[in-house]
Image 1: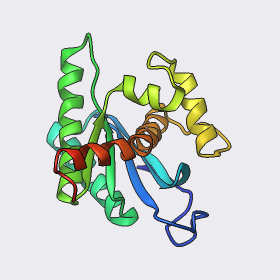
Image 2: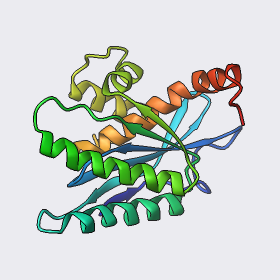
Image 3: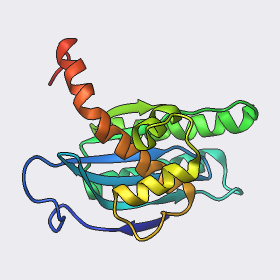
Amino acid sequence: MRSEQVSTRENSSVKKGKVMRILGIDPGYAILGYGIVDMQGNRFTPCAYGAITTKAGMAPPDRLKCIYNELTEVIAKYEPEVAGVEELFFNTNVTTAIMVGQARGVALLACANSSLDIFEYTPLQIKQALVGYGRAEKKQVQAMVKTILNLKEVPKPDDVADALAAAICHGHSAPSNARLAKILGRAK
C-alpha cells in the first residue's frame, strides 16, 4: 500500500466551524485509490491519500481480503464521517467489470462495517462537480483536484486523484444531500 499523509485532524489548517472528514474511493481490483479530505465551508484540506494494491498472482479471495483489511485500517486511522464512492462504468470487458465490482463491494462493506454513511457518484457527476462539465477529460479533473487541494502535483496513480475527486464531489453535494434527506424524513 502506498500512502501519503498530508495532515491530521489535530494539525489541520482548518480550525473554525464544523469540519466534515470525507473518504473518497475509486474502486479497483489491482489498485483501489483512496483520498481523505477535510471540508469546512467550501474549503477542502487534504488529510491523506494513497492506493491499496494487490498482486496479480494472488488468489482472488486473498486480493479482496487485502483490500478490505487495508481500507478498514485507513478508515480506523483517519476516522472519516462519510464516504463518496465512484460508481462503476464499463462498456467492454465483462471479466474486469466483475472483478472490479467485487472489489467495490468489499470497499462498500468496509465502509458500512465502519458505520460510514455512503454516497455513490457516477463519473459524470464527479466531473460535473469538479470541472462544471460532465464530459470533461481526465486531465481536467486531475488539474482541479490539484488546484482545489493546493497540491504541488497531481497524485499518482490516477486512481488516487480519482478518489480525491470523489471526496470533493461529495463535499460539493453534501448540502443538497442533507436537504433532500430532511425533505424525505431521513435526516439523522
